[in-house]
Image (tube, rainbow, N blue to C red; front, side):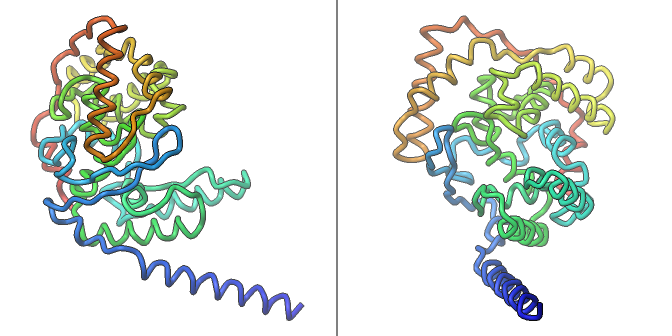
Length: 307
């Protein structure tokens, strides 16, 4: 028995030493504070292949924080991380609940990741579900909270979140789904994009589960109303709107069945969009204009940027 305890203790010590070294070798996050900073990360398409994605102003779809509608920022906060302005990178209570759930289900399905953790994972880590990766994620999230404002973290999150087949970030998402710049998104469209975040490939794929996405976006709009981001008239107007994505399933199917040859981030997006436009011209009816933006008063914007 003593030998078993000794071996277990040795194994734990070795693992902790490995984790300590791994954390020490993680990249710095201080560079992210520079608004001119750009880097390249690897993202996976729906066929499992990796491709480069530019993160920063050098990406033509980059959504700068000051131009992102406040409804878009608040939509992801109320939907993904209600305690965003209260925690310092990780939510202890949520982690405890996730551990309890995973132990009961004997799985690693519930992650309890905050927006900061998701941003750290998207920028620096792989998507594997392991304890070591989760520890790295928490450590990076804590460091990001020390180095960056909450507004800067939201900016990165909204620019690297997956929203479709090789569609990353709301800048690309706004053009892909609604044919408009991200700054022109109205409340319903903001809630619609936020509703897709948990699973744009399957569970919240609007072409396959539109009713599910709309139901979740209704819930997000209700939360925005409760938070005071939307007035009653704005809330009712947003509920009455229906995002125009009719016929776009053919566009997605075309990209999935015949993915473009990616040579670089910029050329990849150009070729993908060119093919999608050809499909639209041949087989889709004219798009219906989406109603005008119903954004709330500008004072909400200042709330987002506070640390």
